[in-house]
Length: 310
Length: 310
Picture: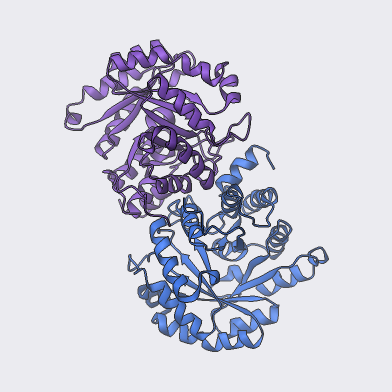
């Protein structure tokens, strides 16, 4: 294996409370979200996507973003932890709400596929990014770290194949409006390792791999192999979701995020530091799965939990 | 990614009918096994582990090995396929039965962990291999391709860590009695990519990587990342099990083999030929899962099946 570029330390951005719970049919109670975030922080998570300031009419699951963040900030036991909270913001109104709620990071989103933006937000990729220009300006004015999510970087449900260079071109455009970190996402989990290597290398050439994060879904079981391919390029930031929250692996059109526990198992096994306590993550993963009535969606989590190695 | 040594073609040894169904609590009817093997062959499988000639007192699930092979050989529609059938043989009696049944390959088995052989077969690794010497001689006399399975190469349920060199030392001993192919197995699915790289490199130095096969379990979700690491060394033979048969992923102590469908999805995605028809594999995987009353244990299989892409 090419180990030359393997990072010695990896940062995980935990997206379960947002990208995960957003896909639950029934909104989860605010108190449960706060408890989940608290447990994740106690397990060592330092970057936490906790909310989406989107229209509650469209996404009722995320209507309580302000309350979740307020709940966390009101918790004295979390005072000693350094956490950067992030939120998805679709527009200026969302960014204002995020600032009000006190996030440290905000996420704007577009795609590497024209068919996807046309279908989902009724505009071209370029237009979608231009619309974020005032949002980015507001972020800069408030010293908010701005991330740009690039969906469908490895394939699109509408157009199928996405050219290798597309994500890199989108990253450049996002950089132009002030985006500081680039979340390259395999939204439908369709990519495989060689393509990952090619796409991330292309993005890295444009904006620097130290500003690129990998966001993988395990729909086709490829997420860890894809993460390994990205690690070998030197990518050192990944998104993951506790218990694989974010789509039931047993349902039609499953879209599960890669499970945090599985990624940590891989990284620790390779001697790569994460600052995370895998045992605490596993008990958190088992707890949230039971609480929302789902089978526990992490393989290493299930294995460790069932063996009471935790 | 280091792509220099990536093979252009990979051979999968399908172990579902043996390693998979052996772990079912209730023995599966012979007719179902024959049908499963037939479908796998029609999907392109050319190396098929179809039986284990072990004591029916200990492993009643495998008592019908002779009948399974006879059933397959009696099927005119399979005449045009070139298939190498293999069987697990624990001793001379088993090898005699395997020869009688007309297999092309036989598998003897030991482990890379002294604690494992002590506990499971009450002898040292070296003793376990010496016992196979007459078995190997009989195989050679009948021109049977002899494989040696090296369990626990990446970790052991009893002794925990297994030294990197252990599998390589065992491979040398196996080679000494006449073993021609070395199945390096992560029996409990506990290994991660870097260790895989180290262990397989060590084995390859002793016996040549072209005679090494990777046998991975997905218990901790690591199988595809581990296969990727082995591919990057140039390993071009892997074991896999249709639908991930071989341990329920939802049960305590889950020990599922990596699903054939997931491996094929990875390989085809990387442009590596397998000679296999993924769509046929997926319908076979969905069929056998339903037939034995299990949830379909392949992620890419579920995704493709639910999308009716097959």
